Length: 271
View 1 (tube, rainbow, N blue to C red):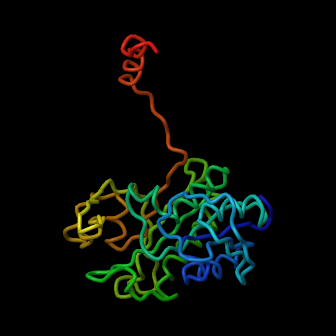
View 2: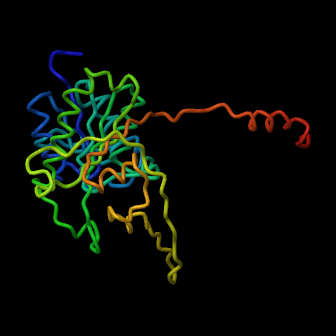
View 3: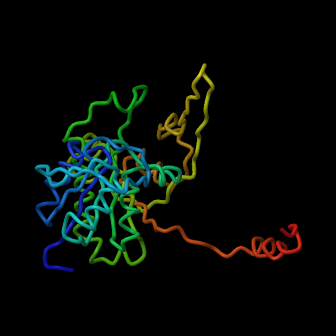
């Protein structure tokens, strides 16, 4: 590693979002930060790739007319110095649970980095919305203070601590600062696993099918069904969730599949 830490910073909310600005300002105090981020909001696009994208210079770095995965490939392959670390975020809205790992653009940027053997941190802000839509909740730069503090700590220490010898990336979810609970003290970090809850359904309404994500309907700490040790439980109870994850996914040996494959030559007709 060079004497100066090199960071590629990206997101999926777009290069003009406040979440990436606060991280840029904080991380620039301890590293050389190159921003390569979508020109506009590309939330929930997963690891979609465009193969060819337009790029324009921006005051923070480069705005890419593409997805977060486009940004990581472009940043690592062409636009910036090859980094020691990729940071994705800070996302406006949490990325919690196993089911979002392939859906979130924020996390997908970290996964893309992992395929380059570059460690990564994806950071998201849990925004309690109550009965409102997330888009209707006002979130300003001050709301990202806890997320900035936690991410800066991990950026500064995780590499030297050997964290990425085991984890390909960290999925970090941070509650909005609660001054009444902690004052100026940091919310505690908790090592978590992604929740297994999945509550998608759909309704047929005229000429449309409307998809519903009902996981977010139960986010009260007293009634939350997610068990201790999960990312959702930690964040709802006011702790910073840090899930160490791997990419690509691990393949396991299965005796049942071996036995099934062995029957194939006798079980299917000849062409």
